[in-house]
Image (cartoon, rainbow, N blue to C red; front, side, top):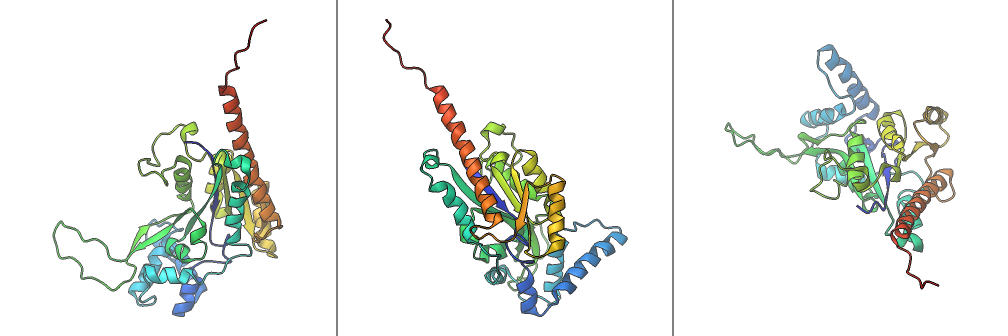
Length: 312
């Protein structure tokens, strides 16, 4: 691996969009958003009281399917989720920030000599299909999120296959929680997201991995991303925390992350040129690019032997 890639990895809810991405779904079906999330919270307690262990981060996926079966979200399909994604509103400067960070490196002639480039990724516990339907889809190099199956493949072991149902979500296909987000980081690190022949659990020496952790910048909004923050910063990468402009409580929360050494910096959710957030991210991208450049330049210089000269 050339190790010439800088990976900028983004959370989604409350990092790129103001609030939770599922809001357009609740609006379209006339469901109270707060009531839905309160039900999800109560389910955690109820299942616990019944002796069941559930994953609190992804329990909402099961509740969406329950609501579909009850007709509350009738006709909710992957195609509909993609349509809802197109309705999402983003913080100022999104999606322009993705191209801005890429151009900061690609337009520098000396970095082009070593094919140094920026890749943007989204790693979210939200719904991947909604992210794909949103305006940032064409701006990113990869998306990790939760996914639903509509028509399960029947078993060939016997029995009677379930009659084909309308185009609605029926099963969870892929679930990502706040801890398993770190798996996505290792996939980017090792290159298994680019090469099918590489398994994320394969043993690969650090110098042979596609994107070293110290070539990564992780941007997210809060404590739920501590596992990902820790993996990136613990291996030499950078972490940035986002908070909505004017929200003192949220600012205090990310400031605590800084004081605890969880992140390297924090700023308002405004990615427009000239803001603290944009300038810090741009500076970190260029700093990593310069470090890659100097390393490659040094390796070339060390590999060149001295030209023979005439002896006196």
